[in-house]
Length: 444
Ligand SMILES: Cc1cc2nc3c(=O)[nH]c(=O)nc-3n(C[C@H](O)[C@H](O)[C@H](O)COP(=O)(O)OP(=O)(O)OC[C@H]3O[C@@H](n4cnc5c(N)ncnc54)[C@H](O)[C@@H]3O)c2cc1C
Image (cartoon, rainbow, N blue to C red; front, side, top):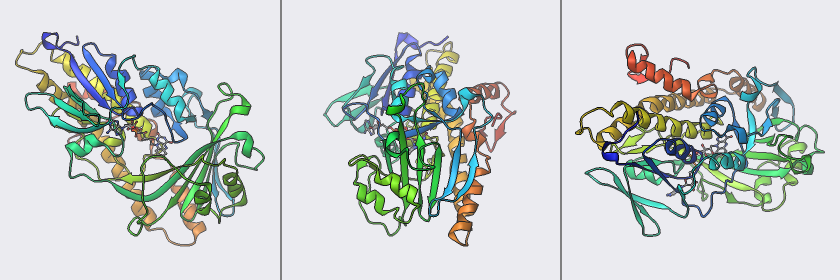
């Protein structure tokens, strides 16, 4: 049974209302005696950034959060890889062999956010609350300080405040992120605006150039959106050398002009240029990608834990960053439930602070090795591509082949509930699945 000593509630403060923060709020508020408050710096929870991939890993965690029924989106039944310069089709793949309900879909970010928000109990989210610093209270808990001058006490801090995390910066002041060289421009346009352009509006397609690509995908399912209201996502990437770059960079969605975006893709196939030229004015948002080294631990002070982008500033999130963030939130809730129920009968000297120490350690034991594996994979891919030389066409072919060869089921087929069950089984049979002292789910 889940129990706290002296009927004392466990106060959990979540910083940030992105997919990680919202998933944590849903999973944690389902636990008895846990008092959840979510602090978000924005005036309103308004998603920007166009679309998101929702694959098996996301569907599973959305099921666990009770939010999957509200998420639909475009069924990715065809993906084309093209040479973006001459338009040649390099590779085409159809739907996966998974049951339809678990197949990948491209979803409007706003719809994922709404589905999550609808599951968060009323009164938990506090907007216009920008965290500025955290003070560790030695006897237990922490004081959160906000830009409006207010202070709030909490037992456990959950840092879900994204890539530029104040929580991470407070706990790990020596950790730094920097611009990776990739700029991303994103928008959603009415499908009717570009429906006449051959090969662009009907399926998910990647048009690769010499220093970037342009991506198109529908984001709506006909069952949820009338044809006249359906949108197409356009996401365009351009890479510069980060060592020589000195332009001002933002990590999250600032407006930019059509001329700026189009100027980076003038050598592309006419179909791509035509589609870009149809984007209405003031519709583009510019994102600069930031990344940093892996953190050895996702927790600090025995009372602070990092989730989502705050915890793993990767150079590439495999189109699954939102899934990772939601999985983190769900695993954190399981860790709390486990510790507070299994230690319910321990002596009264086993304090809330001791239990929280165990909670953050379990969370870290499960999630750190997973992120370590991602960092390792990205390093391997970088080394592999650095070794590819030849013409643009031959290098592109090699990249497309590498990305199509699979081997990432441990990400895309991750079932977070299975991971948790494996961890529980491992607890009762600790010699069964140890790899380098870390927990690795045997299902992967
Ligand atoms: C261009 C682009 C394309 C992407 N495409 C995909 C994709 O296809 N699929 C996918 O799964 N992922 C994708 N991602 C990644 C995905 O968006 C992130 O991994 C995901 O949003 C991480 O969720 P999060 O909750 O950790 O952080 P975020 O979504 O960044 O949310 C952090 C929240 O914290 C708030 N906050 C920040 N600082 C403070 C503070 N000091 N005080 C209070 N609140 C604060 C912010 O306002 C924000 O609401 C993409 C990202 C980018 C930039």
